[in-house]
Image (cartoon, rainbow, N blue to C red):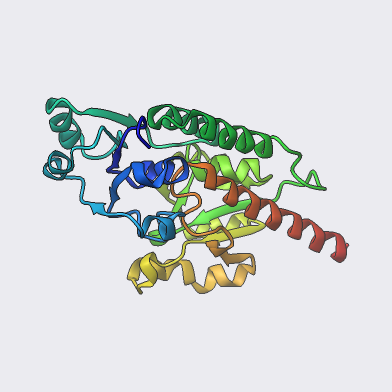
Length: 262
Protein backbone atom coordinates (compact mmCIF):
# COMPACT_ATOMS: atom_id res chain seq x y z
CA UNK A 1 0.00 0.00 0.00
CA UNK A 2 3.04 2.25 -0.56
CA UNK A 3 1.20 5.46 -1.39
CA UNK A 4 -1.87 4.92 0.77
CA UNK A 5 -1.90 6.26 4.34
CA UNK A 6 -1.85 4.11 7.46
CA UNK A 7 -4.94 4.72 9.58
CA UNK A 8 -5.92 4.31 13.22
CA UNK A 9 -9.62 4.39 14.11
CA UNK A 10 -10.79 5.36 17.61
CA UNK A 11 -14.54 4.97 17.11
CA UNK A 12 -16.72 1.93 16.41
CA UNK A 13 -18.49 3.65 13.52
CA UNK A 14 -15.31 4.82 11.80
CA UNK A 15 -13.85 1.35 12.47
CA UNK A 16 -16.39 -0.14 10.14
CA UNK A 17 -15.92 2.38 7.36
CA UNK A 18 -12.19 1.66 7.55
CA UNK A 19 -12.80 -2.09 7.47
CA UNK A 20 -15.07 -1.73 4.44
CA UNK A 21 -12.65 0.41 2.44
CA UNK A 22 -9.01 0.08 3.51
CA UNK A 23 -6.44 -2.46 2.44
CA UNK A 24 -5.54 -4.66 5.40
CA UNK A 25 -1.99 -3.29 5.44
CA UNK A 26 -3.32 0.25 5.91
CA UNK A 27 -5.03 -0.53 9.24
CA UNK A 28 -2.86 0.21 12.29
CA UNK A 29 -5.58 -0.44 14.88
CA UNK A 30 -9.30 -0.20 15.57
CA UNK A 31 -11.29 0.76 18.66
CA UNK A 32 -11.84 -1.85 21.34
CA UNK A 33 -15.59 -1.73 20.57
CA UNK A 34 -15.02 -3.05 17.07
CA UNK A 35 -15.19 -6.60 18.44
CA UNK A 36 -18.65 -6.08 19.99
CA UNK A 37 -21.24 -7.91 17.85
CA UNK A 38 -24.05 -5.72 19.20
CA UNK A 39 -22.36 -2.53 18.01
CA UNK A 40 -20.19 -3.65 15.13
CA UNK A 41 -21.67 -5.46 12.15
CA UNK A 42 -18.11 -6.18 10.99
CA UNK A 43 -16.91 -7.57 14.34
CA UNK A 44 -15.59 -10.77 12.75
CA UNK A 45 -13.44 -8.83 10.29
CA UNK A 46 -12.27 -6.57 13.13
CA UNK A 47 -10.93 -9.50 15.15
CA UNK A 48 -7.84 -9.68 12.95
CA UNK A 49 -6.53 -6.23 13.95
CA UNK A 50 -4.92 -4.66 17.03
CA UNK A 51 -7.28 -2.69 19.27
CA UNK A 52 -6.99 0.67 21.05
CA UNK A 53 -8.79 2.34 23.95
CA UNK A 54 -8.84 5.73 22.23
CA UNK A 55 -5.91 7.13 24.19
CA UNK A 56 -3.62 9.82 22.80
CA UNK A 57 -0.65 7.88 24.18
CA UNK A 58 -1.53 4.92 21.99
CA UNK A 59 -1.69 7.13 18.92
CA UNK A 60 1.63 8.74 19.81
CA UNK A 61 3.31 5.33 20.03
CA UNK A 62 1.72 3.91 16.86
CA UNK A 63 2.21 7.08 14.79
CA UNK A 64 -0.37 6.46 12.05
CA UNK A 65 -0.58 8.83 9.09
CA UNK A 66 -4.24 9.59 9.85
CA UNK A 67 -6.52 9.16 12.86
CA UNK A 68 -10.26 8.81 12.23
CA UNK A 69 -12.88 9.10 14.96
CA UNK A 70 -16.40 10.31 15.74
CA UNK A 71 -17.36 13.85 16.68
CA UNK A 72 -19.22 12.66 19.79
CA UNK A 73 -16.29 10.85 21.37
CA UNK A 74 -12.86 11.60 22.75
CA UNK A 75 -12.78 15.36 22.12
CA UNK A 76 -9.76 15.80 24.37
CA UNK A 77 -7.90 12.95 22.73
CA UNK A 78 -8.56 14.36 19.26
CA UNK A 79 -7.26 17.79 20.32
CA UNK A 80 -4.10 16.29 21.82
CA UNK A 81 -3.47 14.20 18.70
CA UNK A 82 -3.92 17.23 16.45
CA UNK A 83 -1.51 19.10 18.73
CA UNK A 84 1.11 16.44 17.97
CA UNK A 85 0.85 17.38 14.31
CA UNK A 86 -1.04 14.25 13.29
CA UNK A 87 -3.96 14.45 10.89
CA UNK A 88 -7.33 13.86 12.58
CA UNK A 89 -10.56 13.33 10.64
CA UNK A 90 -13.81 13.39 12.63
CA UNK A 91 -17.07 11.90 11.35
CA UNK A 92 -20.46 12.91 12.78
CA UNK A 93 -22.67 10.15 14.13
CA UNK A 94 -24.96 9.15 11.27
CA UNK A 95 -28.57 10.04 12.00
CA UNK A 96 -30.12 9.30 8.60
CA UNK A 97 -29.57 6.99 5.66
CA UNK A 98 -29.04 10.05 3.45
CA UNK A 99 -25.60 10.79 4.88
CA UNK A 100 -24.09 7.30 4.59
CA UNK A 101 -23.02 7.41 0.93
CA UNK A 102 -21.27 10.73 1.55
CA UNK A 103 -19.42 9.28 4.53
CA UNK A 104 -18.32 6.30 2.44
CA UNK A 105 -16.96 8.59 -0.27
CA UNK A 106 -15.26 10.85 2.28
CA UNK A 107 -13.54 7.92 3.99
CA UNK A 108 -12.51 6.58 0.61
CA UNK A 109 -10.82 9.90 -0.20
CA UNK A 110 -9.06 9.92 3.19
CA UNK A 111 -7.74 6.39 2.65
CA UNK A 112 -6.80 6.81 -1.00
CA UNK A 113 -9.53 4.30 -1.90
CA UNK A 114 -11.75 6.54 -4.00
CA UNK A 115 -12.58 3.93 -6.64
CA UNK A 116 -13.58 1.30 -4.10
CA UNK A 117 -15.62 3.84 -2.14
CA UNK A 118 -17.46 5.07 -5.22
CA UNK A 119 -18.47 1.56 -6.20
CA UNK A 120 -19.76 0.78 -2.70
CA UNK A 121 -21.53 4.14 -2.28
CA UNK A 122 -23.19 3.93 -5.70
CA UNK A 123 -24.42 0.39 -5.03
CA UNK A 124 -25.81 1.54 -1.66
CA UNK A 125 -27.66 4.46 -3.24
CA UNK A 126 -29.03 2.30 -6.05
CA UNK A 127 -30.47 -0.35 -3.75
CA UNK A 128 -31.91 2.24 -1.38
CA UNK A 129 -33.77 3.84 -4.30
CA UNK A 130 -35.29 0.57 -5.53
CA UNK A 131 -39.06 0.05 -5.21
CA UNK A 132 -40.08 -1.12 -1.76
CA UNK A 133 -41.65 -4.44 -2.65
CA UNK A 134 -45.04 -5.55 -3.90
CA UNK A 135 -47.30 -3.58 -1.57
CA UNK A 136 -48.02 0.05 -0.75
CA UNK A 137 -49.13 -0.85 2.78
CA UNK A 138 -47.12 0.87 5.51
CA UNK A 139 -47.50 -1.12 8.75
CA UNK A 140 -46.95 0.68 12.05
CA UNK A 141 -43.96 -0.17 14.22
CA UNK A 142 -42.38 0.82 17.52
CA UNK A 143 -38.79 -0.07 18.42
CA UNK A 144 -39.07 -0.68 22.18
CA UNK A 145 -35.74 -1.16 23.90
CA UNK A 146 -34.23 -1.48 27.36
CA UNK A 147 -35.91 0.59 30.10
CA UNK A 148 -38.84 1.29 27.77
CA UNK A 149 -36.83 3.61 25.52
CA UNK A 150 -37.96 4.01 21.92
CA UNK A 151 -36.19 5.24 18.79
CA UNK A 152 -38.02 8.30 17.51
CA UNK A 153 -37.64 10.90 14.78
CA UNK A 154 -34.14 11.93 13.79
CA UNK A 155 -32.56 8.56 14.53
CA UNK A 156 -30.84 6.29 12.06
CA UNK A 157 -33.39 3.60 12.95
CA UNK A 158 -36.27 5.94 12.05
CA UNK A 159 -34.88 6.63 8.60
CA UNK A 160 -34.30 2.89 8.07
CA UNK A 161 -37.86 2.06 9.11
CA UNK A 162 -39.18 4.70 6.69
CA UNK A 163 -37.05 3.37 3.83
CA UNK A 164 -38.28 -0.14 4.59
CA UNK A 165 -41.90 0.97 4.29
CA UNK A 166 -42.93 1.25 7.95
CA UNK A 167 -44.59 4.02 9.97
CA UNK A 168 -42.67 4.75 13.16
CA UNK A 169 -45.44 5.45 15.67
CA UNK A 170 -43.03 6.95 18.20
CA UNK A 171 -41.98 9.56 15.63
CA UNK A 172 -45.63 10.22 14.75
CA UNK A 173 -46.29 10.91 18.44
CA UNK A 174 -43.58 13.56 18.40
CA UNK A 175 -40.82 11.55 20.05
CA UNK A 176 -37.39 12.67 18.85
CA UNK A 177 -34.17 10.75 19.35
CA UNK A 178 -34.05 8.11 22.06
CA UNK A 179 -36.68 8.71 24.74
CA UNK A 180 -38.81 6.85 27.30
CA UNK A 181 -42.20 5.72 25.99
CA UNK A 182 -45.07 4.70 28.28
CA UNK A 183 -46.01 1.05 28.02
CA UNK A 184 -49.66 2.12 28.37
CA UNK A 185 -49.40 4.22 25.19
CA UNK A 186 -47.73 1.36 23.35
CA UNK A 187 -50.55 -1.01 24.32
CA UNK A 188 -53.22 1.56 23.41
CA UNK A 189 -51.61 2.19 20.00
CA UNK A 190 -51.56 -1.51 19.09
CA UNK A 191 -48.80 -1.17 16.47
CA UNK A 192 -48.60 -3.82 13.79
CA UNK A 193 -45.08 -4.68 14.99
CA UNK A 194 -43.18 -4.05 18.22
CA UNK A 195 -39.45 -4.67 17.85
CA UNK A 196 -38.01 -5.34 21.30
CA UNK A 197 -34.33 -4.78 22.01
CA UNK A 198 -31.99 -7.73 22.41
CA UNK A 199 -30.15 -8.07 25.74
CA UNK A 200 -26.84 -6.24 25.65
CA UNK A 201 -24.02 -8.79 25.37
CA UNK A 202 -26.69 -11.46 26.07
CA UNK A 203 -26.46 -10.70 29.79
CA UNK A 204 -29.64 -10.60 31.91
CA UNK A 205 -30.52 -7.14 33.23
CA UNK A 206 -33.42 -5.44 34.99
CA UNK A 207 -33.49 -3.00 32.07
CA UNK A 208 -34.77 -5.80 29.83
CA UNK A 209 -37.75 -6.75 31.99
CA UNK A 210 -40.15 -4.20 30.50
CA UNK A 211 -39.62 -5.62 27.02
CA UNK A 212 -40.99 -8.93 28.36
CA UNK A 213 -44.00 -7.41 30.11
CA UNK A 214 -47.21 -9.54 29.90
CA UNK A 215 -49.14 -6.57 28.49
CA UNK A 216 -46.69 -6.39 25.63
CA UNK A 217 -46.87 -10.11 25.05
CA UNK A 218 -50.68 -9.89 24.98
CA UNK A 219 -50.52 -7.61 21.94
CA UNK A 220 -49.28 -10.54 19.92
CA UNK A 221 -47.22 -8.26 17.67
CA UNK A 222 -43.98 -8.13 19.66
CA UNK A 223 -40.94 -9.76 18.18
CA UNK A 224 -37.25 -9.51 18.90
CA UNK A 225 -35.29 -6.95 16.93
CA UNK A 226 -33.10 -9.95 16.07
CA UNK A 227 -35.00 -9.74 12.78
CA UNK A 228 -32.52 -6.93 12.07
CA UNK A 229 -28.94 -8.26 11.87
CA UNK A 230 -26.96 -7.35 14.98
CA UNK A 231 -24.98 -4.14 14.62
CA UNK A 232 -26.48 -3.26 11.24
CA UNK A 233 -28.26 -0.14 12.48
CA UNK A 234 -25.99 0.85 15.38
CA UNK A 235 -23.79 2.81 12.97
CA UNK A 236 -24.15 4.06 9.43
CA UNK A 237 -22.15 2.28 6.75
CA UNK A 238 -22.55 0.16 3.62
CA UNK A 239 -23.69 -2.71 5.87
CA UNK A 240 -26.71 -0.64 7.01
CA UNK A 241 -28.44 -1.78 3.84
CA UNK A 242 -28.73 -5.17 5.60
CA UNK A 243 -31.10 -3.59 8.13
CA UNK A 244 -33.17 -2.10 5.31
CA UNK A 245 -33.32 -5.46 3.53
CA UNK A 246 -34.37 -7.32 6.68
CA UNK A 247 -37.13 -4.85 7.49
CA UNK A 248 -38.39 -4.81 3.90
CA UNK A 249 -38.66 -8.61 4.08
CA UNK A 250 -40.58 -8.29 7.34
CA UNK A 251 -42.95 -5.75 5.84
CA UNK A 252 -43.59 -7.96 2.81
CA UNK A 253 -44.19 -10.98 5.08
CA UNK A 254 -46.76 -8.96 7.05
CA UNK A 255 -48.50 -8.00 3.81
CA UNK A 256 -48.54 -11.63 2.64
CA UNK A 257 -50.05 -12.72 5.96
CA UNK A 258 -52.75 -10.05 5.74
CA UNK A 259 -53.52 -11.07 2.18
CA UNK A 260 -53.89 -14.71 3.19
CA UNK A 261 -56.12 -13.77 6.13
CA UNK A 262 -58.28 -11.61 3.91
